[in-house]
Structures are given as C-alpha cells and as structure tokens.
Image 1 (cartoon, rainbow, N blue to C red):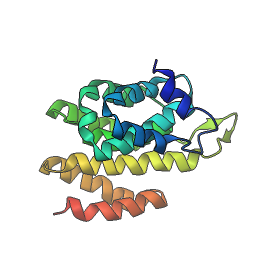
Image 2: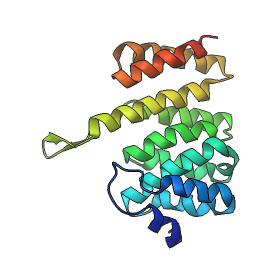
Image 3: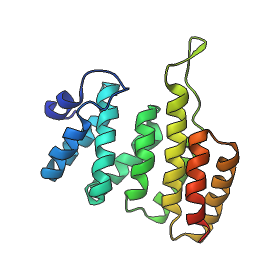
Image 4: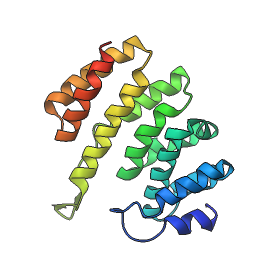
Length: 188
C-alpha cells in the first residue's frame, strides 16, 4: 500500500475528474525518488486513486520514461490483470516507453491487441454511464501503443498497419481519426 500522501492527494470525487493528478506530476518531477510511491497507488483499493495515479504516471513517463524501467514486470503484470478502463488506457501508452526484450514486446503487443477488444460495460441490463466513451479511449490508446511498439520492427509494422487500416474503416470515430494519423508513420 502506498504511503498515505499520494493516496490522500489523489482521493475524492469521481472518475470523471483528474483531481490533483497534475499536482502529483509536479511533485514527482521535482522528487523522482518518490515515483515508486505513486506507482504503488496503481494497486490501491479506491478506483479513483488508481485512475489518477495512472494518469500521473503516464504524464510523468512522457517526460521521464526511465523512471518506469525498474517497474517493467509489475506494469506488464498490471496491464494483464486489470479490467479498469482508465488503467488500461494509461498503461497502453506506458508500455511502449518500457525497455522491452523481444519476448516482453510480444507480450506487450498481445496485451494491446486484447485492449482493442475491450467491450462496453453492461450493468443490470443497461450501459454504464461513460462506458462507451471509455471503451473507445482504451481502444484508441491501444492503437497508439501498438504503433509505438512497431517502430523499428518491419514485421510488426506490417501487422500494425493492417490493424490501423481496419480501425480507420470500422472503428469508433476516435479510433478512425487516430488510425488515419498513425498509418502514414507505419508505411514509411
């Protein structure tokens, strides 16, 4: 369990708000030795804390990807086990920032392909509020993650280009737009 500091900063409200995630980013950028404390919040009991911790970790890793490196196994494990959509979409962007072996890259690609199959959450016969949008975000981020993983791998590039072609025709509006943006990069 994370020290109460980050959990208490990230707690409160609901999953439609990032709360104090940006404040947390600033704190960690100033004191990167506390990054592990933030990552521990990805396993917190409160889904709001988990979501905001994932948001902060993803933003931090965009600036300082090396902070993720010691936690590669844990992050890949979390991506495989979580069903929380907000974690999945942030992890889809984090995975390509990890220093992956060939086997780990294959595992990461398999996870992101699985994310492309995210289903809309159904609760007592009706669609949960926000689930259509969230499922689309997971899928759109998975497309982005696959494109990043395909860099420098001609075989994977070809496979991901085909996925992008399909998404540009059959995906949600967000998926179609992202796939059209990413496809030219894969065809270089």
